[in-house]
Amino acid sequence: KQEVTQIPAALSVPEGENLVLNCSFTDSAIYNLQWFRQDPGKGLTSLLLIQSSQREQTSGRLNASLDKSSGRSTLYIAASQPGDSATYLCAVIRGFGNEKLTFGTGTRLTIIP
Amino acid sequence: DGGITQSPKYLFRKEGQNVTLSCEQNLNHDAMYWYRQDPGQGLRLIYYSQIVNDFQKGDIAEGYSVSREKKESFPLTVTSAQKNPTAFYLCASTQRGNTGELFFGEGSRLTVL
Image 1 (tube, rainbow over the protein chains, first blue to last red):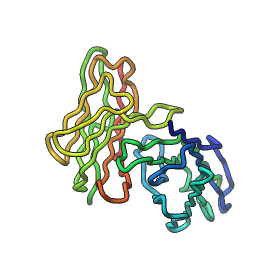
Image 2 (spheres, chains in turn orange, red):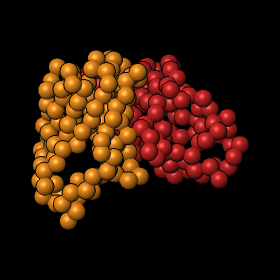
Image 3 (cartoon, rainbow over the protein chains, first blue to last red):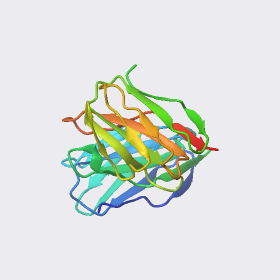
């Protein structure tokens, strides 16, 4: 059974710093991996999707990497801003159908002005 | 603008009552999903549908029911058989045969009084 872990559960950093969020998964046979952002009381917003054949994806100040062999993905946020404060979740899709998607419990990020 | 609309945003229910949460998408996506989110837990799949008039149970389907009569609509009914229905419910969709990127609505928070 696929298990997805995000450590730490919470992280606080001063504004302007670069930071890395971690996502680990136990089964390397994945189809793709998706990173989401969730603001309090809101739905999930898709940030980046990395397909199994890719090593990384970039969008603005965000860069996500994928290492299937070690079962790890990282989300790098450059020059953090208070507006980046949110919970970040990763989700692993094992098969073609999304019914096989497994979510981590997320990292709650706080950027201190 | 294309997206997923969930309603109502907040819903209060008395014990013993059935309630229906609405999910409508105008993204022309084939597949739709319902997830439940509880504090400290990852998202859990309730039901999913990959085509009209067909749907499958997820990991925690007991006490829930769905229908998929139209491509754009996937309502979820929380029945009185659901023992602990207070939660945040999220609807999502994706285009099958594509990258598998999942898109979410804003969520509905159900509270049982």
